[in-house]
Length: 519
Image (cartoon, rainbow, N blue to C red; front, side, top):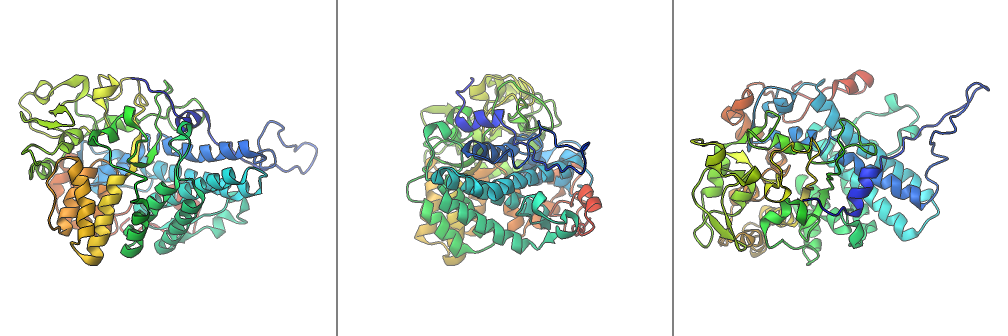
């Protein structure tokens, strides 16, 4: 099913931010190119400001970022997935990543592309004579985009340079740019998210859905506070947006289909688009911006890549309790493809394991018992026969980055960490459970919160970073090499390899940079 494009999807598909360069002439033979864009020719009016901010969003849909490669730096590293093969795609998950691999440098480069483009907006747009509200909104978007990219960078690489100006405004980019203490990066992230929350609108017109809102920025601010263990500030931020502006969808599965994008539960999602374009390594106009990572999640037989299976403990976790009707948690069928004859009646539908072309488990894997991924693949709606039907960018299903369910669970965690199993913590986590007919908790432990996050958020780019911030990478992953048995286990682990290696090209270029511990 082909959807009607929304504003942001369409503009991202058409717009790559203009590369800015400054030419100087020392003699008559060294003249500026009259066809080249320079800062003096761009950043002139509101139209340029709009192009600049959409270009900053555009970095998210590069195939080196969320369109595909970022999954190897997030979900492929956690204890849910057991990816096949020994390659740069699986190396980070087995703590065997190296500093010169494409996976290391490509994701880093794409995140810094987003930072760079946001810096250009923040530096230039204040000087444009334009509608003040529109200016503030665009600046708010740029603050958010910069902050979010830095959240991703500091969580994955830890020791990263903090750059808040266009490179053209830094006198000595090699000598002046150094790695910044992580706590200082987090201070900047929090500052940027506060600015974003103040400058952004509460909502965008229907034709512009997908652009970040004030509520989305405040939700991410709460997440930043939680990750830095400032639980009181996290609760304050989350409470601000637990005011009815966001709501859980009635059907859990609506958060993972192309037909239900940018819904009431969504705080921030990556605007993927299936417009027939393909391409590798570009976010220029005409290049593909679809969900190329589906090939890395799809069950064997539906992918042209090695893919991954899901570790058995995840299914066991889903099956360890029943709905109020004595059935399997409906989130299980949305998240996983597994072998069972049981069904669950939910939202007027009878749920059972299904994959592409509506095939049952035994039709695909007769006699098999392995568990596979199902979330995001959207097989019930998109009519595709496999994950790469239509090419790398064949799916336009948006990737949800922050949902209201996550906000509720993070609020419950922050409340639990400060006050224990209170009514406030129970109310938050029980809202998430009630949506899928799970019985309410009457008291909770931290383990209950962890388990609920597995059931609600698996395969949503959160699990590894949860384990990391809880200080449990060694306990949950390193000490259980069987969880990475399909890609060589975890014997390559050394202290410090919870984080990714600083890319070798950055180390070679800047003598101020030092490798991360363990590499």
